[in-house]
Structures are given as C-alpha cells and as structure tokens.
Image (cartoon, rainbow, N blue to C red; front, side):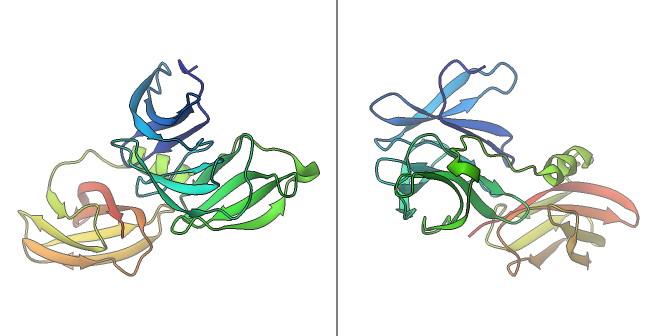
Length: 241
C-alpha cells in the first residue's frame, strides 16, 4: 500500500517509473511511487484543479483530467506543473480513471457524466482534450479503475539483450529523423513496433547515417543492430512531436 491516498496512478515505460496523483484539499500534486514498498516521493504541485486520474502515453507524457473545470491537462513529470489542453466536453464528477492503449495510442477514459448521471466509456483527444462517447456502462455504473494490458512492451523489454553501446542514436527521443553513429561501417539496422512488426530495415555502410521514421506514429519502438545474424545492440527509439 502507498503511504498516502492517490486518486490516479500510471506507469511510464520510458523511465520505468510509476507516478501518482493526490489531492490535499487545496491542490493536486504529482508523486513517484516505489514499486517495491509503495512509498511515495513528492515531485511537485500540479495546480488547484482536482485531478482524478492519470495516464502516460508511449513517449512518457503524463495526462490527467480535473473535475473543477473539466479540463484535460498535460503534466510535467519533472516538476509536476500542469498545462491545460482543453475541455473534455462533459461535467465530470466523482472517481474516474483514464489510460492509453499503448498499442494504438488511443486515450480512453472511464468517466462519470453528471449531465447524464451515468458512467461512460470515452476516448479523449490528447491534443485538444475533447472527448467522444464510446458507450454507457451497464446500469450507468461508476467505474473507478481502468487498465489496458500492454504485454508487448513488458515482454519486448525483458527479451532485449544487454546494451553493448555499439551505436549512438540521436536525437532520441526525436521527431522521426534520427542519426546513427557507430564504429562499424557495415551493419543492419531494424526497427519494430510494440507488437513486434518490423517497420524499418536497412543496411548501413558508413559510420554515420540517417534513418527516417517520420511517417510512423509517435511512440516507443525497438531497434536492433546486427552483423549478420549476431545482435550487436538493442534498445528503444522514441518518436515524439
């Protein structure tokens, strides 16, 4: 158990950190959570809106909804400060939850809409905050927890071989066009998505080369550097905008 009441928690796969949101009666604050013993460490105060959920996208960005103003916020995970993105378009109330499907990038919310006095399943636009009704929960139930399994991420990370620091990739995270530097002049470079589907493959024959992944959606991908069938290095490559 944590050492304080939390209104929302989420896990950031880019930093292997669990985060939580708490309300003290005056302001919401962001905490990191020790996954071994549950203790929390204050990162910083978010703002005066009551944040009642927390979600992290594949690039490590944190989002939450506040029920004072019914806004979606983006949260700085280093300071806790939030930035309002826009209204979710309903009168949200009570305990709710929100989570990204990291395989698709879609943000889902288990909402309670005071306008309809009903629990609703919604998608939320992480750019504007606007929400769209998917359907009403049976009996108008208030759903206070939402989890979307992302087995592809945890399995992929565990199965990656130890990083041998063979190649330098920058900027990473980046907008989609990356520079790869290495000591070798001939090697293959493959990139797969969270489901293991190969989205990019090439043979690099110089110690410095550019790869273009800008046509792919933002998020976390995995790369492998190979010499023949031998894997020289594996790691994460993150596309963000």
